[in-house]
Image 1 (cartoon, rainbow, N blue to C red):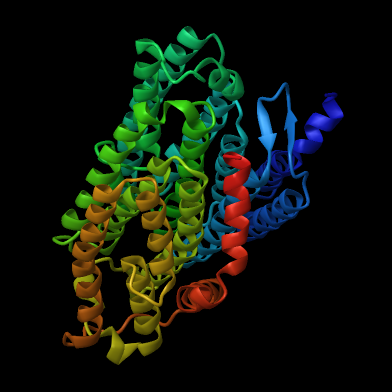
Image 2: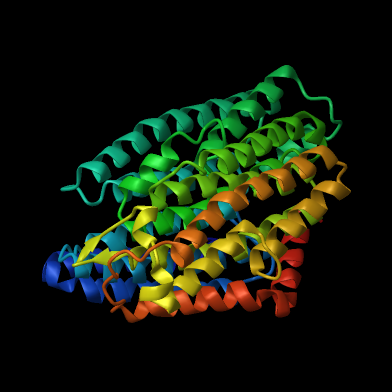
Length: 478
């Protein structure tokens, strides 16, 4: 394949790469006053990349099959781009309100998004690692972006140290797999391991590979960074970590396990089931005692990654479909929840304690209703969208014979109701705390409304998303 055809396959990524460099130069020339223009330029680039992704080829490869464009990568990229665009919208409002506008922020988020898109299109471990490190380096900076804030600096340092450790584990696993299979190409590795009897070195390589990827999705026991980073990072950046970054990492997990090792399912399934059950349990029980709403969302995120990994453990196209449906719902529900958290301000200062939500229904009924709806959707209560997300994952697990993990997941989901309902109870039944400042940002209000509509009405219009997820899963696992 010639260079022109290769570049056409990676057109969405080229739009982001060239656009990010252009916005960086524009911001450096015009100064900090350019921050709003750079933010809107970044959103426009993400929309353009989304259009190029949707209109791209159904199946094509580039650079000697190092990158692949297919239905799976298209579905993942659309979710990543949506999460990134809405997070930048939240960030522009957040930093404008605290008078800390910096044009570098949307540029760094664009570069992180570029890494995510390369990750989900990777068809070899070399391209996978290149995209992963591009994303990770940008995320380290984002976590500590508010450098004058102690907790933000601490969050960035913790994430960097633990991220470097996980990258080393991932790279060591890749080197073992390469050493014992003779290739880093996914399809070549699948051909070598086709007989289902891998060498001990390949098994060790898979263990290290899963360990490195589990860190990226904050699955137990590689979750230690999550509560501190969620609490310390600025709220819109936390939203970006919880949506676009999680979608990219989990889709990478799907491709890096299911494509090169389809015949080794009995070797890696037990590891995935183990971390899935632990993540569901920790997310359910550890969140109960939290008093900070962002730390609660961190443990909620750990639990949700456990549910999604149950779909991966199924090892089937139905399981992959369940994960993709889960992610589509998870992105919009979490964006709405973080938009509500960003609206928790008194006298211009952000508050994050759950007790600050006391009596919200009597001071701002609209915010209380949207907040409650999104939390109940995260809990998985019917007929809200979160119920369908968990339903498809549990269905795939049961059909794959994973009955006990599925039952444990249902029990963990039931326990998780405790902390979600606790927040709802505080908003509707406790004595009112002082009212929050009025939500002034049009973008925040639009995200809240969009997320509320998705949570409430998704079950009545789910067919197009389910169809698209099914096609994406079949592209990954024919």
